[in-house]
Length: 58
Image 1 (tube, one colour):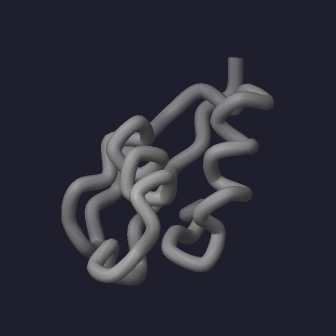
Image 2 (cartoon, rainbow, N blue to C red):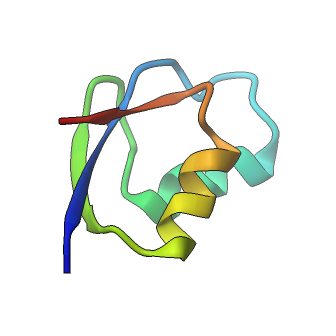
């Protein structure tokens, strides 16, 4: 299955707890950290929820 790279581009400070938990479940704990996940609908949904904080990297 295809993989997708996700980079955190904005801080998690002063964000709602559900957005912080979504970042945690994606494995994003620091600014500019890049993680790689399988491209599944569940991961796409998490990215959509915090789309203002993350960027999909090619």
